[in-house]
Image 1 (spheres, helix red, strand yellow):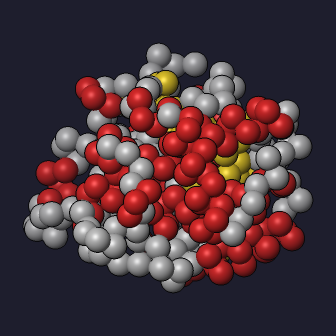
Image 2 (cartoon, helix red, strand yellow):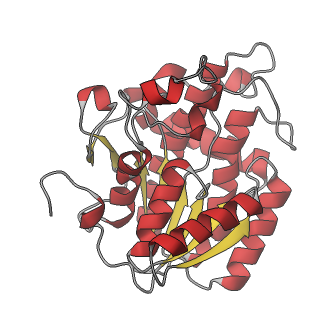
Length: 305
């Protein structure tokens, strides 16, 4: 293994099935491309199938023999999540990797089809539901993993605002994003605890890309100005480097359940991946369990663990 973990350290993935949400762009695309290049059958689960087809075409052009397929998935609509899960279960009796990558960041106030605040509904509840509906495909698969992409922005949230989860009284798009990313971490930690108790083959791991210059930044103030992304590229991880934490969490044989991977550089903003620590709030078991119960109630999805 190289001194700085990178894509060449990803072991052979032949025979493995990897489902990557939001695999059509950004770090999701980069992770999907590396996994396909290492021999995995990669399922790109996306809302826009045309963009998914273009991403698959690019991967297949880059990696001769790459095996990529598509699944239609809109995480902001529970009906779409259920339909996608039904299709994936019917197609794949086993899934080795579920990478919960897709997300939205800092949008103007919007709600999902089911009435949830868009960031909480998409980033957390959509992935919570999808994982619960697919988990039976992973439980008995040796080496299987659920990797959830979080963010250093979890530090912004302060806590899970159970008294106003959907930001109906007031809306702060930055704090709402932070809450959704804190929820991602709490979900990953609680899921891993349940998997361990269940004696499952599956582990749950979290990762974050630091600051990565991708389409996710399109709602950042100033992002539409000329030269914004060129300037951002000087102080952020490129998408291929931003994807490394996800890839390490998904494939490194030394990874353990409940770990969190992120960049090794200053304040975890940039750099190659290593084990990092999330804030104290994210490890509050009582809040994790309360969030789990609320998430089951809101989505109607019960887990087999």
